[in-house]
Amino acid sequence: MSLLVVGTVAFDSIETPHGSVERILGGSAMFSSMAASFFTKPRLVGVVGEDFPDFHREAMQERGIDLAGLQTEKGGKTFYWKGRYHENMNSRETMEVHLNVLATFDPVLPASFRDSTHIFLANSSPAVQLKVLDQVHKPQLVLADTMDFWITSTHDDLMKLLPRVDGLLLNDSEASLLTGETHMMKAGRKIQDMGPKFVIVKRGEHGAMLISGDGVFVIPAWPTEPVVDPTGAGDSFAGGVLGHLIAHPEGPKHGRLRRAMVYGTVIASMCVEDFGPNRLRKTDRKEIDERVQKYRAMLDF
Amino acid sequence: MSLLVVGTVAFDSIETPHGSVERILGGSAMFSSMAASFFTKPRLVGVVGEDFPDFHREAMQERGIDLAGLQTEKGGKTFYWKGRYHENMNSRETMEVHLNVLATFDPVLPASFRDSTHIFLANSSPAVQLKVLDQVHKPQLVLADTMDFWITSTHDDLMKLLPRVDGLLLNDSEASLLTGETHMMKAGRKIQDMGPKFVIVKRGEHGAMLISGDGVFVIPAWPTEPVVDPTGAGDSFAGGVLGHLIAHPEGPKHGRLRRAMVYGTVIASMCVEDFGPNRLRKTDRKEIDERVQKYRAMLDF
Image 1 (cartoon, each protein chain N blue to C red):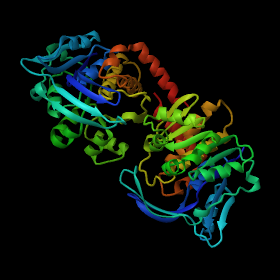
Image 2 (image 1 turned 60 degrees about the vertical axis):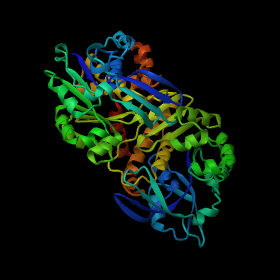
Image 3 (image 1 turned 45 degrees about the vertical axis):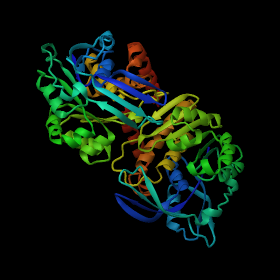
């Protein structure tokens, strides 16, 4: 069993009420791989420019991430995002985006990655996500993330992607945009009609909801305090879910996915406690397990 | 053990995307008493006008509510509220309010009510809430609801009330307004410093959070579908909590309050499935217990 993660690797500059950082390691593939690395050795597919420093590569390799699929574009510059979070951390403002090497990213999987069993298609165009799927031999479980921009601008491509994924990950407002339904149970079922067997609705500080053939599962967020930097929360959630699924193949699928979502939630709660991947670089499986125990106690009645 | 509920009894006219109703039975004391009536015989204190019909009285008496404290003001008109809910049911617009007899409401407890052990002070001015407390001999547990208007307009009175209540019930934005904190854990602890031993933060479709000496308890909402009319959700939650606490005095207080909040959540989820108290009038303890079982399964991992 092996996890393939496709997405961005980036430089992030971030301002929050807790401070600011310049050009730190970011990106959806980075966050989800970091999160998954507590359970498995994720295979990362992405692109960076020649300006991408070795110490960022090493930070990922230290966590066991396989970078054989991280292309370096000669003369290119790494994807750069600059954003600011406001007081309540629920809204963010993009101040600068330079796609750079991402603008022409054509994901090519190394031969050694094509037998991956679990695939996380982090947020990118459905066309790119489809191109990745075409290169995988026989995936057992494909989870895709998407966002409002792809739903409106590349709707046809998205409709081609959805029958090929097992699970779709998106937030409340995106689920409403995709289905025209404001009620998440209804929206979830409409998305299931488009192909995915399950839908995970991300609700930020309110946790997440799983809609599947087994009904609905609702999972609140850990009340992290303070939230220093929300960047990467959704991706580290997804990476934690898939990593845990790979590491714990026993038991009914139903129960496994729920349990995996608890781990994803806990890892995401750690991610937001410091800027970028700083907190995830400092934790370990033991601390994660301990927070899962506390989380369980918090929900017990 | 006996529950005293003080609040409004009203005529509500309500428009939602699911339809509209004119002058149906409403009010915070009515909803919370209805919800508590599955566990105990609540004592209601409130005021109506001479226009208040017998069949509304009977609807409450049918559920075992003691109306000895429901004053009828001669020549007066019952409090009237007209409101409209928008598509997502999270925002509502007040179209008309006629305080009528509520404007001069001076709560006087019947002698038979003064030995009540559990008190729910539904949303009203802290001065009125204090006046009620002064008339109760020796309450064991006092839960008060409040709102933004009292927090800003009658802050001093509220500060006098808070040391006299065990629990405060309010929503996210009201907790932030009262404390200047956007993070609910911090806000909760600041409110505890003002007097209450526990704080319940209502989060609408996202459930509720209990902050107490025992730490934090997070409880998601039941994903009711469709939500026909959200009116009374918070009050039926509170009534369910207090009713269940009275009926189940066994076990540690910590666990009892959590369990009671589950019942409050489930009863509130039923309340919103029809206009006004219509759904609560049709259910029974058996159906409530069944939904609690389903709720437990929904959260299991």
